[in-house]
Amino acid sequence: MAMRHAGALGAAAAAAALVTAFVAYRRRRTADDEDEEEHRHVYRIVLTGGPCAGKTTALARLSGFLQERGFRVYTVPEMATIMFTNGVAFADLDRDEAVLNMQRAVLGGQTQLEAGFARVAATTRRP
Image (cartoon, rainbow, N blue to C red; front, side):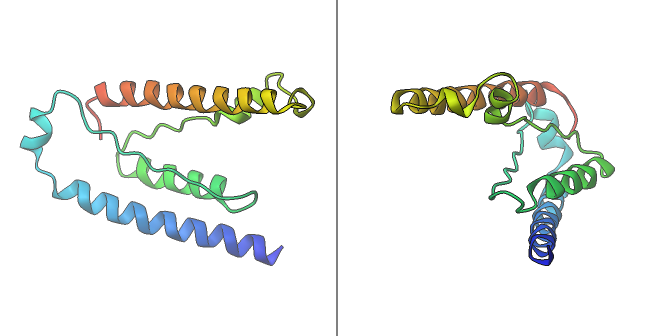
């Protein structure tokens, strides 16, 4: 239990350091540059790690941290989770072809989800 807790704290500390650097960078940009952009640049932060690595904890802290500072935060759901919680079962993946099709579906779906969120985020005029 102590190991898992330490991992979550480490992930949260790393996320906090990343956000601090990001906020400092954003403050350096001038208002004139932002007004000339047709669409805002969308910053993406990707959290990766194995089970119990602290991704969910880091996401909650990171999201709250940015929102408290006036940023609009979008969190994109994980496609594999969407599929497994909506009918796909490991028993369905009993052949190599089925596994490959699942991987293709996850990649394609995740890419589409991220692109959709990015399009919406880019057209808002909020940081």
